[in-house]
Amino acid sequence: MKVAIPDLALVALVGVSGSGKSSFADRHFSRTEVVSSDYCRGLISDDENDQSASQAAFDLVHYIAAKRLEAGRLTVVDATNVQPESRRALVALAKKHHVLSVAIVLNVSTEVCAQRNANRPDRDFGPHVLRNQNSQLRRSMKNLRREGFHKVVFLNGVEEIDNAALVREPLWTDRRSDHGPFDIIGDVHGCFDELVALLRSLSYTVDPDGTGARHPDGRRALFVGDLVDRGPATPAVLRLVMGMVGAGDALCIPGNHEAKLLRALQGRDVTTSHGLAESLTQLADEPPEFAQQVASFIDGLVSHFVLDDGRLVVAHAGLRADMHGRASAAVRSFALYGDTTGETDELGLPERYPWAVDYRGKAFVVYGHTPVPDPAWLNRTICIDTGCVFGGRLTALRYPERELVSVPAAHVYWEPARPVVTPEADPGRDLADLDIDDAGARFRHHRGRLAAPGVADYQRLRSGLDFGAEHRFAYPARP
Image (cartoon, rainbow, N blue to C red; front, side, top):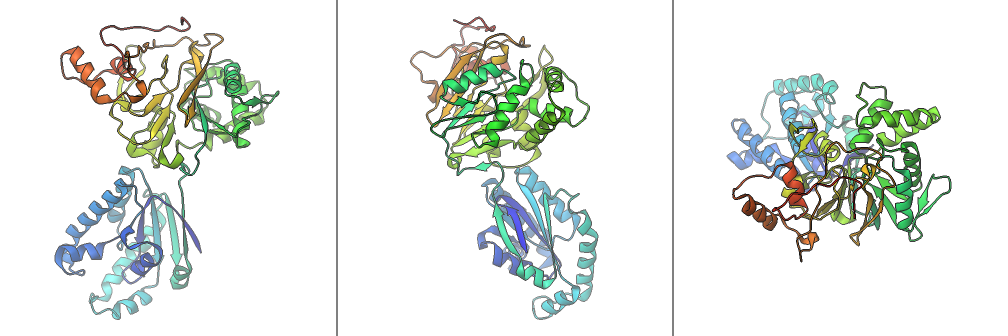
């Protein structure tokens, strides 16, 4: 029996004493990947069977497991795990570290377990222990998925356990073996003409019918999301991007606007603000099957990509370093919406925490979501949404060259709700090398106090501005 598990996960072995969990772990996992409750009990009390040390032993199990997950290591917990409260702690630990949780149930008869325990002189507990564990296991089996495990595997009987073959699979976000080169394209928002112009400026050949585009040197486009809403030609943008992805000429991740459009296409109750109404009106003029294709396409997009041996991360709204290459609802939410403060500004829009100020990861993070007039590097992060739909530009970052290419918008298609701060480069300073420590010092010196920057202040800080003056930028007024 083939058993596929994510290569980064918390694996809980579930079974009564004597079901073969430790032997199973020895066959399928390295010694360092397995955290055994018996071993930890021995570390605490010098006796692996000293039940009085169980609480301290499980504290140690959880501590070691947490440190491994924090380091991005697959972790296997070898314990009976037949009690719901034991499994609940493991599911919570997996969620805390943004990894998937897997339960592998070794379902062996109590007779076999009793015979195995009888051959082990250190297992001198009575038959009632096995009966209680087996009863707890039987009550648990149908509830494991509802408890929060991403995957549950049942291995029934000795033969099935012995014949199991474990296969480790990378997460969908893991494209570390993909080295590009890429042309990473910012938020398009239905601006089809500008997208075609940008692709051609990047030397792509665009099909006359707008259903595909390819680069003569094999480069691929990578779209950061927000293909839809606000602009005049959302269906045309989708048709082109979907064609490129289907042909292997592009990759795409979702933006928050795709997430909302998907909910609408699925018939869920959503407000049609921020340009969604325009997308739905434009899609209504298309054949019905096209909307189904769009829904299927969006539904298949993953939260972010980790590329080029981990040197590049692309997420719509950016991503903290501890979330790179991981999977949880929190990771997807951050990738789609960013890190919000929970408060709204005077326009009723959410205030976002400036996560890039605190970023210390080794990977370059390329994102969009929050329009800026000019992209600028900060702590190895860069936002390439230059507000095309607001009359700005559509921008691409060529990777690994780290060269920016952009085309101007033909019109102001949508009036921005919030003005965008104009970056003003620090003379003689390469913004690609801008570091938060010196930028933060300048900010504190100017304000004359130690304080965290607000959202508007962060826009200036991110761009390395001279804090002595404030500037506003209104599209399309541009030199």
